[in-house]
Length: 309
Figure 1: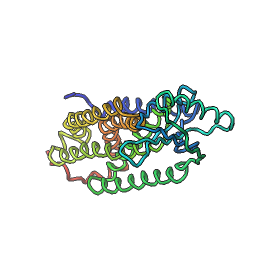
Figure 2: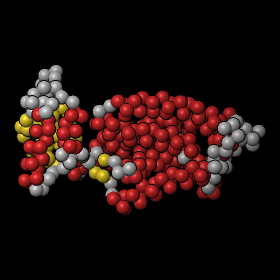
Figure 3: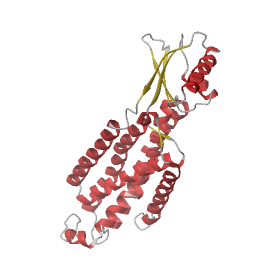
């Protein structure tokens, strides 16, 4: 990697990301996003299990009766959680839904003899309006504040490049969910906002090294692209090691965690990989490309950040 020209080869890295995003977009046109119950609404079923239970047992009971897409949460006032709240897609045929409830209870009684269904409610997509609006607002405010901060600390071009890298991570995560037809729910929104904070931190580290090198290196020997390449090489080990240690922890959560943890950790895994990739191969090349534009070159002709050779 000592002689690898990251900026000169950036078109290949950007092309790879564009291909993934286009593939995801194609899958959106084919079958759309698989929106979870948080967005579509459904039936909320309260199960009295009579004793402490495993979420996997409830999921298996529904799966044996043809329902795979459910959300299970535990409830109860004692240390032992004995009540399960199950959200599933509403079945329009009342008789079919009644038959399903009876079949599920009979299946559960094999392991939990006291199991019963205490209530069934139909609920709307509580997140479909307000949550999506709040999530988009939070992401927009975060991007604006990060742009202001990075512009103040570095310059406007670096702020633009950082925001483009964040959008890259968002589109990659959405493409992954579309390609594999994974469920998008409130945990995915939380994962995206988490990755926004993680990815921008990696990008700031690279940008900070670029600023240091621009201040101390000879302008004649190290023009912007050369200083950027050197900065990426100097921070790459740190970026990879940080991302790898976090990735190992999240992967363990995915492997050993319950279904709700898996739904959160899988997008995080994708986002961690995308965030590390964009910090190294996307953000800095975009900054360099903007820096070399004639419109911005005029602004930098009088630059004194480099020492003269």
